Image (cartoon, rainbow, N blue to C red; front, top):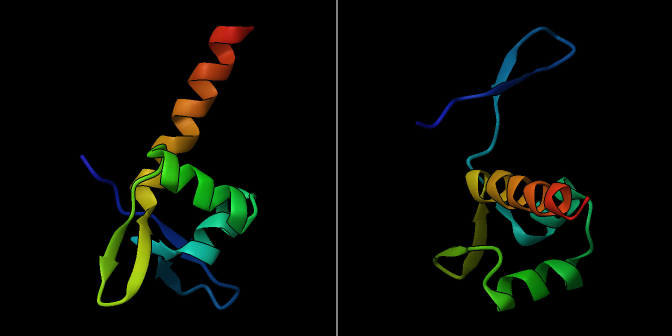
Length: 77
């Protein structure tokens, strides 16, 4: 079900995409601010998990969130 993706660097080496993002990286990745990301987390629209004291967002959850928002937006049109 999950698919491994990778990013090519200028050197030609393939680097695997992250499986999870810190909150600041997650916000930057989807182009929103940290305040809005925290609102989405508090409202339950975006799932997180913790490792030790770090709170992370799975890459799959970011993709699912974007897809869900796109579907909702297309229904309104």
